[in-house]
Image 1 (cartoon, rainbow, N blue to C red):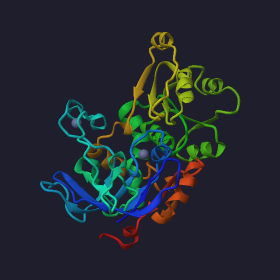
Image 2: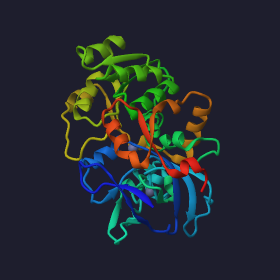
Image 3: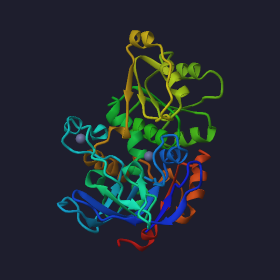
Image 4: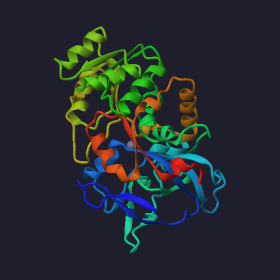
Length: 365
Ligand SMILES: [Zn+2]
Ligand SMILES: [Zn+2]
């Protein structure tokens, strides 16, 4: 099968023919229809998070189950599924308490992908979906209805759950509060629409790009703060009666954004940490002030998502017009043009670029 491989950091991906091992017990093979490009893929391509090369990235995918490992009964061949990087054992203390995104024993396997000469290819984020097929654990899947287009559905695998889940699950944000979302990119727009759906009385988006604030307004932001126009803290205070926001969502992987976030936060408020910074970065904060104001820092990985619970909810929000998905897609590209799609995503103006595989046009394999 064809895959777009990272052979060296900071270089374009290379389309190569690779071999995929058959699914083992508890795993399935999924033939992909679509895979969206996420900034995490780009961070990996740039070497920010290390890892061995060659590697195949891509982790925001949807397709059809085409082979089942021994003992898999929850899925059938031909079934449409979304594929995520959330891999969970189902029975550790975290899984048992409904927190599979921090599973303590996810059983990461040796990679099923290799070059024709046998050289192993790292399966990026336990998914490796910049390829025509993946072999993943069943915990990484969620069923999709037949009428949901796979390009639209693929967005639910990462950006949408990370943004909306930060609001619904990590923060458990109640209705009526004020929310500030720092960064109006792929995750930020979804935190904005999550905050709208959750009933925030004010949803303030903050970004350095005016066109991204315009996009945030489309997704439900009541106000926009251009971080480069005057003191951002003064602007947030002016919009929140001088208090700051009850919930501040950091959706960008920038230390500076984290350091500013507590200054935007109301007394008793929470800073929800959804943006992933590079491995070696640290932030400065004044712990005494945070304690004095009873502010909370809430870590949020993949929106604290429980696939079986959250994906059906999100699909219903989409069907009823509350959750915008079609509007998140900027452009569609074939796998051969993936580097163009990535370069466009790097510019930061596009929402999500989606790779459509040959199977997308042909239908169920
Ligand atoms: Zn992602
Ligand atoms: Zn677990």
